[in-house]
Length: 195
Image (cartoon, rainbow, N blue to C red; front, side, top):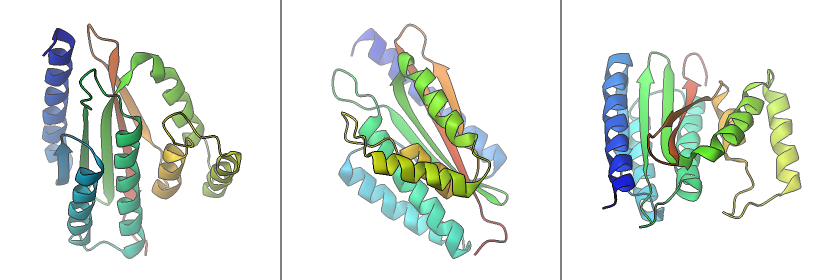
């Protein structure tokens, strides 16, 4: 294993463990995953999410939103997450409840050069004050049908924003002595008083 790979692996392991400890102080851990992502593991995780979320006995509307965001976040990491020279993808996923809020956390490796664009994209989504305007923005992007080289139309964050109904919280953590950073995204769904 090369020096940068060791640095990244150790960094991710430490970040994942720190996040789990933080979650335990803030609320109830529902599900956590740190490992290889491929279509098979995503299908398995989706099944675990469905069971875990159904056991929470929350209203159907928020439950559907939580499940949808989880699936979208996992797909985003699979499609857009950076893979190292060995094809290994660094990412983790955490689902937890803090009071009347369900938090969906996804974290993956990105090039530091991608930070500005991601910050801008998320800022645009967060600046919509009205859900209807954000949905219109989504439809506008859908109609443009601009497909990236990785096969996406750039709709993932927008759909997460629409379903969440709350601001997306993005954090970028520099990984010293590498060209990479950790991209950490938290989407939340309120479960209080909604059917």
